Length: 359
Ligand SMILES: Cc1cc2nc3c(=O)[nH]c(=O)nc-3n(C[C@H](O)[C@H](O)[C@H](O)COP(=O)(O)O)c2cc1C
Image (cartoon, rainbow, N blue to C red; front, top):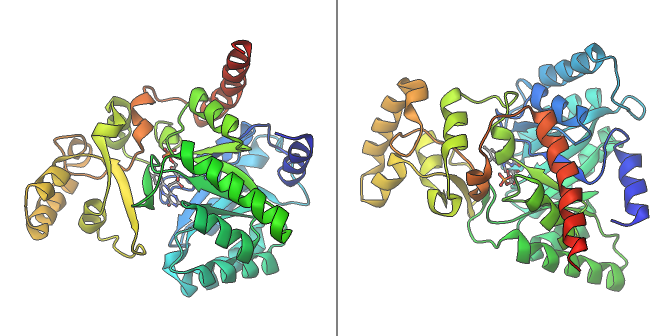
């Protein structure tokens, strides 16, 4: 990372330590406790508002309370809240209208935008957020080189999160791994800067990074930092049920035991995603039955039944959805989100030093 980049990161997010480690805004899972703990450890914690803001205001108030009860040690600029908030744009104008007053009131340091129905929606959201909360930095998650270029031209985001195919949860059905996607995005944006004078956003890598080696690899590719979702599922601060957390810790061999699919959305009724997106989750009986020809109606009936079983319903023989990325096999223990953030950040530096010593 260049000196200028470091200075600008520390100006925008004065509490962070570099390289940046951020927690993905996982809807219903990444709430005030997780976001606060990640930021407290020098990362960027995001609250996942997703497609619904009904509890967003209270989560942001909770972050303020947590900051105050911790002696206010998180460095802030002009009362900007040292966490981010993430939205799923396919939810449309109603969500934007409801989100704006909350963003204006709390001024989170970053707002994360993902999965629009079209690029015009991204432009509208970016413009409106900058109007009501000029201090909030705009982070946009993209999964292709073409998208990265279009979004840079039309929205001029502060940060582009480059999401590779290994990512847990939703992402593009047709996509590539971060190791090839990231450098191609980087090259394309360098060309845009040279040819069209468009300032290159900061680039952060996501997808399949759960520990220091993955983070070090992303930094070697040129990333300013990393975003992790799957790793933070195995923290006490993630708002998930014990059965889900256990299966994340127990699952191995993520390339074999997870897939990006539509079946989990169909079972859960979350079918509003734009075409082209699928959700990567741990394979279970619902998935296998769908593959073997079980009708959606019957699969749903059995899913509803499993829901009643609670924690017993997860795992390869269960039916409940556990979204997670291919790196799930490297997640072997539950650990506090602050410790995870610190370990990945500091560990990446050690890995890079070791690698440099081989030269
Ligand atoms: C359980 C889960 C839920 C997710 N929910 C969201 C979400 O609501 N909004 C979003 O922008 N991304 C969401 N993501 C995707 C993340 O933004 C990110 O791309 C992904 O977690 C990175 O890959 P990793 O899981 O391998 O770390 C989710 C990911 C997971 C694992």
